[in-house]
Amino acid sequence: MSQALQRIEQTRDALVDALAKHDWEAISQLDLACRSCMEDVLSESQVDEAALRTNLEALLTVYRQLLEAATGERQAIVDEMQQIHQAQNAAKVYHLFG
Image (tube, one colour):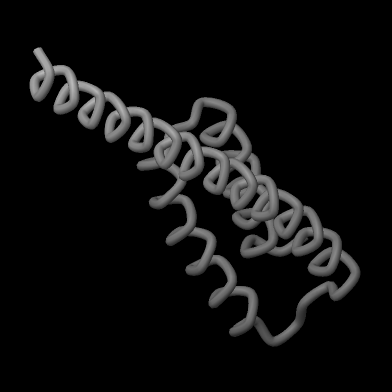
């Protein structure tokens, strides 16, 4: 396995760990590292296509999980903001009639 493919695998494993911890800062850094790994793979003259395909499919699975987690986090924030706005509106009504 080429060094670039090994870096993709290591980066993927680190992404999985960061996702498990909900460490979004680490995920953003690892995403940049993953992009660099991809550039390195694309610049290699000889690549084991089967190994590359396997690594990229596994990486795609991780990115799907990241997308689902990010969407869930975003929805949680939206829900929390709605609750805050409802509480503010209730406080305004209370002060209006209180």
